[in-house]
Length: 198
Picture (cartoon, rainbow, N blue to C red):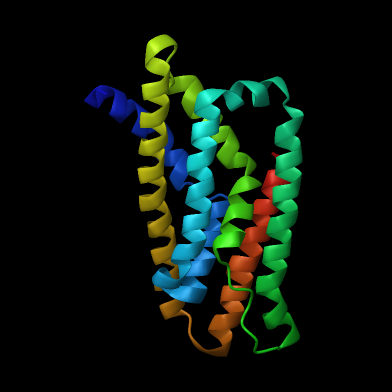
């Protein structure tokens, strides 16, 4: 891999990975609720599925998905529904006055979120259509791209979790909990609507 190839890859992939999407909004919410250390199981679930997606698409699933575009619509709808559910879980304590903390997101939630993340599937298919190789180089290139994306994901996801954790330190007390519920629950619902409209 040349430096120019890596620079071109980063120019395309960094904005896609870092932009607000289902996983990144969930990471910020988890960082605010649980802190960085206790959000790591969620991150492990999401990034494990992302790595598997990369390998599957790199070794041929991307072509199958492009042949059946309705698969994206199914994933988008299922993912939006799950985000609506998570958004509701964040809103419920604030709306009911119940002091119970909202749903704590863990490894299993990470698996589900990323499996149903249509943006993630599209991003990986795009990466391989732009940067994948044919012939003898295909296997090595697929492994490199999957490893590069995994590293970028881990760094970016830690940044989103840390940003959520920093934000929560500024929002303490009863009012702060309501603001968090509206900010993160509303953010998840907005991303769910965006998925349905996209």
